[in-house]
Length: 305
Ligand SMILES: [Zn+2]
Ligand SMILES: [Zn+2]
Image (cartoon, rainbow, N blue to C red; front, side, top):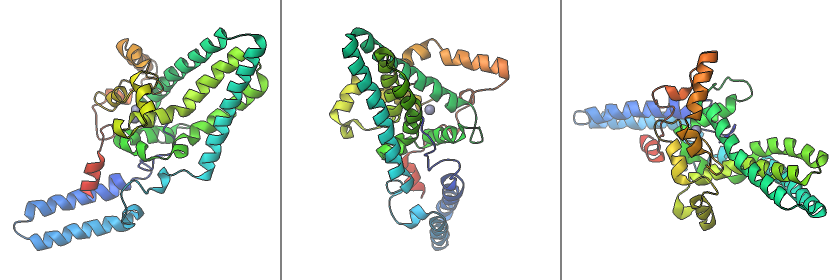
């Protein structure tokens, strides 16, 4: 989640939605339906349509693969700097907690606080993900780009696996830096520091856990597969259910520990009713699934090109 102002295939970059793809589909169906009568003409029409769309799309113009070379999926030095600062702030928090725990002869409490931080990070990821999946749009203040990016993620979920590490994490790392550095400076309690370190670390890496949940088992590191299958990290099967109809469950993306509890008790449905009766706002998940929710596979996208 927290997919962030990242998604090149977003509604602000509509060439896939409005320029490229529909034009090609239109011309292609024309060619197919009339091929038996005027094959040469239709071949020209199809090639022309492809040329028009290639000329509008620098990615296609390059003649390279559709996604893998997309610069917006690659890490910049600014991304890497933010991830380094986020990791440093969390590491300092954890180190300070450990040193102060040893000084105070405290062991059980900091460990339990860290576990609580890990569990609450999963719950927080679910609540946040539910909120931006269901409410607001690209013009919403502060969260607009993330809402838009999440809608893009539902349409092209596989692009997250092509995104480079720092590109995927930098926006969360920036938030974590601003939150955790003051904690590092102001707090000395080892229990609070342990909670803060685990919670912030899991939130910062939640986008990586999310990317792994979209990975193929054979291509993931064995240790990641083991962590997913033991429930430490959100599993591929659990998250894949989020990308299937009715698109209103399995929002948590750290460990997924809360998904069953939240879904079986219809917690989000209850919140949606409260929001509806209080503010008259319907969540997106109440609408019939449309093309904004449903996945467009890479094979289809390439085929339509
Ligand atoms: Zn979602
Ligand atoms: Zn996903």
